[in-house]
Image 1: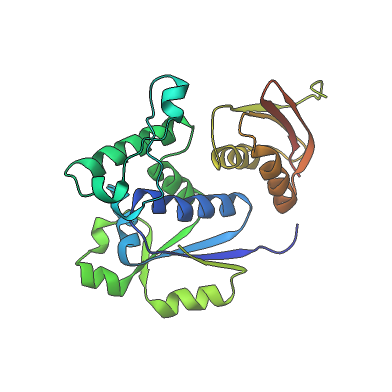
Image 2: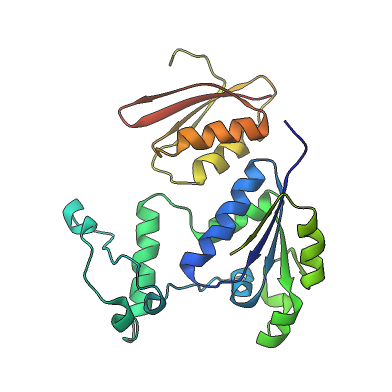
Amino acid sequence: MSEQKKMALIASQGTLDWAYPPFILASTAAALDMEVQIFFTFYGLTLLKKDIKAKVAPATNPAMPMKMPFGPKGFQDFEWPMPNVLMGNMPGFESMATGLMKQTFKNKGVASIEELRDMCLESGVKFIGCQMTMDVFGFQKEEFIDGVDVGGAATFLEYAADADIQLFV
Amino acid sequence: MNDTTYDQELDCKGMNCPLPILKTKKQVDAMDVGQVLKMEATDPGSINDMNAWSRRTGNELLSHNVEDGIYTFFIKKS
């Protein structure tokens, strides 16, 4: 095995679909013996809250397939011709789409965001909250899970400068 | 190939990326050097993923085979 690789991630989105990539990559990198730090900024900060309330936003995801997570296979595979751009503005549609996505993920054996986040912490992934956006959004460190450090752009860049992988999600 | 002797086993059937890798890593970490883990998965991506994982972590992937949609891996802890 070569020397330990490092990965630096920026998590800037707070929707359910975009919450997956940073936690999947971070937990897997740790399983590959890499050192990982995630810098949570803007809407990504909400992923540090004790209770994650991330939803999918069909209105801004016109390519999102609308599928049902129950019933016979043919029914499940059917792509409902719903114009997300229009439906996304209907009250309750976002919650429904979020519920369907969570159920589909569960049916397909995909871990929940909370599980992946726990596995990140268990395997030593470091979480940094962006001080500036915390201030702007009025978030207190106490609202976040334990073990979150707080810093700014320089904190991230110092780590990223020595990292082998740097990704902005 | 399935006659390989092993010390521990792990069932990752039905799990999707990245769970098989995360569970394998956790279990291998708790094993002694030289011990062998038998891991079963149904995720078709697990062949490439397990190979990548073993190259990266230095644990030896002794063998893998596919039968009836079940991927069986034998991993020796290094």
